[in-house]
Image (cartoon, rainbow over all chains, first blue to last red; front, side):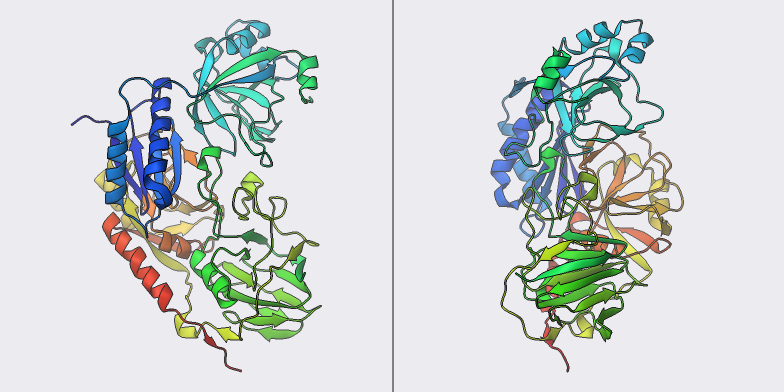
Length: 229
Length: 313
């Protein structure tokens, strides 16, 4: 029997499905496709689904169903997934004002690998990223993978205050802070786009399985789009 | 519309309903009452359905003034209750007249008390729920705790008779509890010795415990894995970070996390755990998911057998 997909009990009303050992852009598409099918199959028995990197956590109503039934539904949904890669569902563009005045760690990050800060920005904006997971805080999307030349470990002392819209790097992941919060990621720019707006009909511009492209803008465009340093 | 005005919020008083479900894709956690059994009884006493918004009072100290008449009930951890200067009981429907002051003292055993009003608090829902999650700044009023001067409008509902939950049906709280655990997640990466250590020892509730999680102090547990790819966290999941001190993740937990987990606590026992105070003691015992399933159905049958009765004069 192959090691994956693997189902594991995760609680009295929870099963976790591991699709693979490691995450990859192709896998994220499959996770989202599995989540969509489970949503339909389990209907009102379902309390929530949490896709993340290489797994989906299935939370169900233990008084309406049980592990046995949910595991069977998961296996059926897995069998229905088309073989091969599943394309990302959407490509979302996120404008970023990259500059030392908007990204406090941009220059330090460049110095680590002998790059000018403009070059760091250019590398960051030159590839598409996969949305691997959403968590930590509402609207916080983990995007990857960052080019190794601009990957950098978390700060040894996290900042007590990172502004909303800060674009940041930690190891080979990148993210846009959805709200002002403490944070230990390296700041490289600011986006005027709100990653989480509790009042909006569509509170988040991205979902797990989407792809993201960062588009460099200048200070004037940043301010015209509602940004403020 | 009648309302209750907050004069003193106490240590931590939060508006809660059952919780926010189906929003993990946005990174939103569930919130909701830490002891949903006590919360349901408070709503039941005043004739509300279980989805009504009430106040979770942690430790006590809440003081309210009635603007118009109100019926209310307090359940959960017992604390001294005064209406104006008259002592009043918990687990019983109480009446407030316009201008009356309700003062709650502090609990000594248990730490979550629930104050429900007839009709519930009429608070706007966010993402389908009024549950306050401080970390997310979502729910309640302004996403925050109750503050002096807050006005809590009451929903409309026909008054109920003066009734109580007879003492024989009341939950008793203690300074020690045993939590049943469904082994799962990375359980196979904890050696037999480590599992025996976890299930064979007592842990003390740390004073850094909160609505996100109960942090425990005791014999350190080691996992063969250092970290894992971040994955969804079920309610009650027991996370073992690098220092080996377990954390039971509760209502305001983050939706995903990258520490290994030995299993998940039974929800019924999470309610009892959440009533423990810093310095209290917890033990763990493993059960199968089938035993957990049976325990949940038995508990539902017991909840249905609890009957409110007319309160003695």
